Image (cartoon, rainbow, N blue to C red; front, top):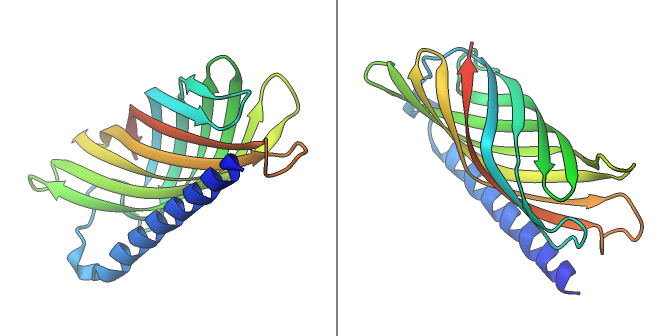
Length: 193
């Protein structure tokens, strides 16, 4: 019962965050947004990271959460609508992998005539989680926020202050003992090209 209440609360929080991000994007007129000075393709990785799994008895705990991602901005610059593919891992007392599709909308803030640039990148992911020690797979959904600081040409420092995820492993009983939540934070590097 407590797991279901926490699940409902988590879903409500994720819905409110997505709604607020959508309202902010719609409310800002297109001409008011800065254009990025960086190229549309990117490759990024997070290695200084931690993930916390909760409410799933076998996997609860703190994990190291490295991940690698590549993607493309459809504006032709490093801003606007973006799609990417992410491969992540949760390494702790168990090993869990995740393969996710990432969609988001990046907002660029060029500084010093484009020499530096800050990008605020809200995103959502959908995909699969799977255990490496057995044939258990589950659905994974998350909302998060990335910050990017371009410091030399296409190179950037990546900071993820928050990513909240919810999912369900496809083993009976559904929607009870197999529901999981995780919270990830991390830092890494990337390059836009």
